[in-house]
Amino acid sequence: MTKQAYETLFVRHASNPILSAKDWPYPAHTVFNAGATRLQDGTTLLLCRVEDRRGHSHFCAARSVNGIDAWVIDEQPTLLPDPEYFPEELWGIEDPRITFVEELGKYVIAYTAFGKSGPGVALALTTDFRTFERYGVVMQPDDKDAALLPRRIDGNFALLHRPIHDTGAHIWISFSPDLHNWGNHKLVLQARRGSWWDANKIGLSPPLIETPRGWLMLYHGVRNTASGSLYRLGVALMALDQPDVCILRGDSWIFGPEEPYEKFGDVGNVAFPCGYTLGADGDTIFMYYGAADSCIALATGSIRQLLSWLDTNGTAPERVGSIRPTA
Image 1: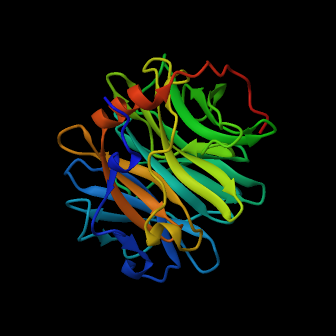
Image 2: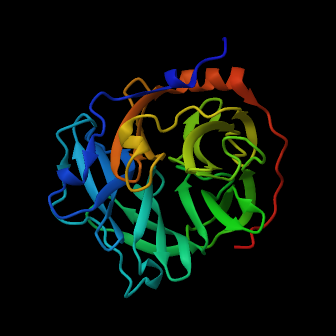
């Protein structure tokens, strides 16, 4: 395969943006960074981050038969911060990522709880997105950008997340027997240095996609420029039985802010996916992303094309090793 232009890997939907605050049944400032899943009846559910005029966020579910339009939005917030019992949620809950865990028969939502100590990773479980079992913070501040793998690895649940500590902002994986107690922290993918597009910090975007060749990781990379930060999307492939081992990492970014709704908003120049669903063919990725922290957009891609692109445009990095984060 010859080198492939990044524009062909994800194609924006003609209806973008597909959801924004003007669609909401109650007052909202912005709507963005939605977790996504396909329910058993085939309905696409987006668990959207909704920010109010205080600057505090909560979650609200939107459902669609085709995952594109005719969204039915909950009339009231689906999941609100609960600072009385979870003080780490004092200033809101943000950026949900949804994984269905067949062993539990439940959806596990990893999200950012934002309180006085900073952002931390919290978990909530549900079967219907009506009632929730909240586990509270499982990764202490400063930590965010988390998602659970859908099955155990060597007998343990596995959580990808992004702590910030004295060595930088990189992607880690941690393991747990029960979703409450976490350990065996391992560094998975590092932000690159110098003039790379992902030189300043990186973080997981949607949950990992399981393929026969490995776990496909879509991650966001940030590069600081004279006019501000640029948030763009890269791709890597992790080993199936050792998801802390990177097999291939793309050398260049594959998707970034280009359209006006991505370049201009509350935070300009941001394309930030938190969720995806797969098409009936098992190959098509429906990627839902926050655009400029102001609306939700949709782009479609192909697992086969992403893997083929990685074969040509990827590098097998050195093993980054395992050290415990200080955060």
